[in-house]
Length: 254
Image 1 (cartoon, rainbow, N blue to C red):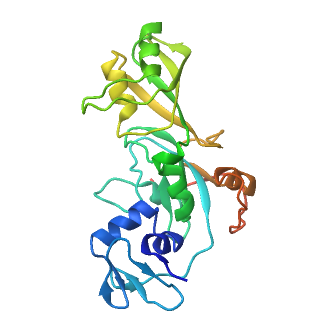
Image 2: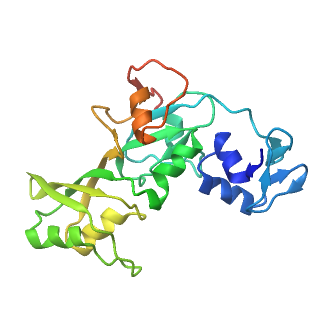
């Protein structure tokens, strides 16, 4: 059965469909020895599909891991420079890609998986999956600032943020903790909104992606998702993936 190449790559564990589309556009994918084009289809059962000259790996058992990304770690599956990446924190073999990227200096929940279909569902804007954050700002916000954040703020590039749920949580010295829930995620959006509203952001901790919660995971700790958690993320679809033990794990690398 023929399917679009980006879907075949995603199902083989090479990332989201959008990430796999970039592989095709860059000329890294071939079908039966010929460089593929975006939109092309193939039959995995009869066609030879390669990425960077290597045949696609057999589909791995699906793995789902919740990680508490610490600050000063890149949300990337492959190194771009000498900085540590989230993949370094999980000593599990196979392809694993981060879902729901966080800035280098932000922390909190990241889902690591080789399920390209779920990755696409959780990251594509049309699905509108909520992401929840605890945000420490350097000043105590007033009602006008919080209301402006809730309505949407015009960013420096001219785009206006979508309405968000924003609530005051507690004071912290001269600043305050606030809760931000939103369905979008432009690069460094929370920090820029805070700056534009006169609320410099000191710390960001993501506590939820869709139905998946950070819970009591500490920085660098990770755990396998339960079948119920995967089913909820998929919107009730059956979850068939490799069964793993559930204890928390911590990378001991320094």
